[in-house]
Image (tube, rainbow, N blue to C red; front, side):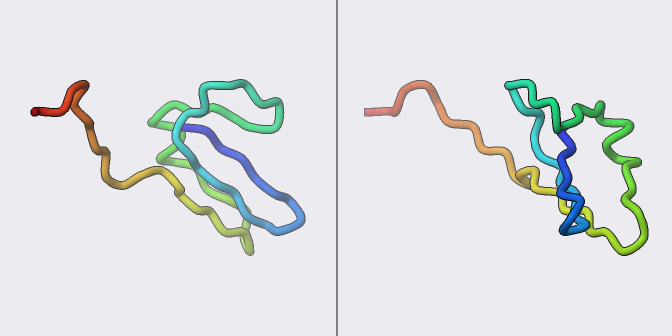
Length: 61
């Protein structure tokens, strides 16, 4: 998962692991991502998809 934040809004986000490197984002393993907390007065939003859908490679016809 990837952690990003916006200091002036006091909010942090956890998203799916990003494929591109961003110097302002932090990649976390599952263990550390689950244990992540934010400072008092901040909000942590988990924006990862709750449901994972798989699509077949070919549609039946």
